[in-house]
Structures are given as C-alpha cells and as structure tokens.
Length: 88
Image: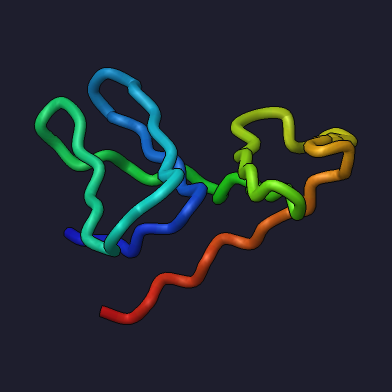
C-alpha cells in the first residue's frame, strides 16, 4: 500500500527495529522497505529547522519537548514546515 511521502517522516522496521527518516524524496513513490517488508511510519512528524543564511537543514529526532535553540551562521534557525505532498 503506497502512502504519501513527507519530509521529516520517520519509519521503523517491525522485524529488526531499524529506523530511518526521509530527508529528501525526489518523488512521492518512495516506499521504505526493510527485512523484505514495508516499514511502518512513526508518529508524529519530526520538527525540521532551516538556516535562513546558508540553507542548512536539521531534523530533531529526540528531545524536542525542551527549550531547544539551534544556531547556524550566528542566527537562530527557524522551524520549517514539512511540505504538503502533491496530488499524484
């Protein structure tokens, strides 16, 4: 079953426990598989941040409940919304 791919979405393998995160998807056809089966999406989507100066991007994997301040190019990085998947 195909699901829309979203930047920042994390997936887990139900067999071996491997976890991956989408950091770039050229198409909406990306379907993560591991151990010969589709990986399950994890909730919620992780927070993404972008540097307004150089364009560097980071994703918060754990610990996004506290007062996190990400600095790049001597400036506070702003939260970047995940793009809405386009209709196929």
